[in-house]
Image (cartoon, rainbow over all chains, first blue to last red; front, top):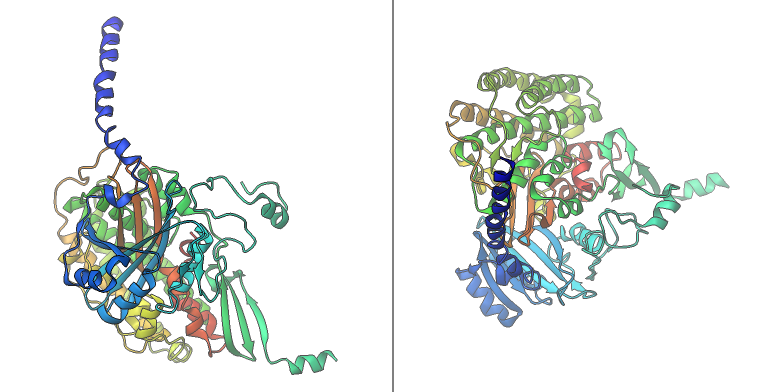
Length: 208
Length: 370
């Protein structure tokens, strides 16, 4: 029995390995994905009057208007997001800035995605604006267009160290003000902390 | 000499919190006062920051599911629903109809529980002691159903990616029906205590006004937006989990003051009962789990999915790099964005109104700080 089971057991792995090898080819495809995520996404061009108008008005400052999983997004050059937000707000009724966030891709030359989500009450539509920026690049602030950008940009600064030019009050918001490091960057470990801050302020060796 | 400097100074900086019963958690508000008048505020948040978004990047999709309950801990079911819907969107699957109906019932039940906590503590802040006992009494009944369903009262982890883990227990429908029948007269009871109460009105009417324009400018959503007259609810605007099947109203008011927000939330509780009554009558038969693999591994891509949580728009922006762990999981918490409007709402008001305005925003610090 044991002998019979063994060959079975040894037979089992190859198909399993074969099966594992099948998802493996997409994996190498997924591994170089971080540099260019939109290339891997099965995104289709966003076909609408608004997309065409944006393309026309912004020319090569907008590199892509696409739809993925039924969600529309625009990829813009780093100097474009705020003028895009302004255009969308004033001329297309996208009057509600839902969110600003970022994604860190350390291996890519343009290290960060900064993502703006806007919504239009009149159209009941949502659009994401994405832009790729290298480390140290200062984006223009969106506070002049949407007041809600104030805290949202502060959080992006706090978590990623992305600075916004012209922001009225760019301070850390969730972390203590003297904290060193930007926790949501990929090179910031999950157990990492600012030891000096913890020792000075909490009087203990470690916060963990 | 000290007297002279005291009389000269017109501005006083007062620290409210972080340990203050009326800030509903560890929120610190720095108030700049001229006598009793508030000249400006500055919120200091982050005391409850646990790095939920960082944790997400170090857990699998399934492992992260219970963590989301710890954000808005008085409405954990809504958090779970939003997260599950976001990952389901990435996987391009939908929960089966039976799971959707049960999800709606539990989410609405949790909305009632969340609004009851708001009502009780808000009234307590204003100085009305009785409502909190009434509210917690009824909330207990709602939590009993949640506990019987999934074993937990607060951090429920009620839903799974793709559907539900547990079938409804025997007598689930009956207990939900009983709750609905019992609850509506209780809302009347709260309203009898408060709605026309002279002290209540004197403390709330015209306090902390936020107009519709200002709401949009600040990205404020939920009951605060609806009290300002904007008829907008994600359950109607972009229905999810089968909300389009149910007949319910979006309560709105016109003035956008604290009293209107109170009325809107009271009516929302009645509407939640209405939705539950319809859903429980028509729970479809069938499986409770969609076609989701044991290992959850969405294709490379990203999705932003949002739901109408009791506090407003709760959004999840999930980025997948094709592995079993989210590459990035951003939570767009309604309380965080709504709290930003506090300064606008209270500027020029009285210091006694600060607690009324914090209460009416219905913030949960676990969600703000994440």
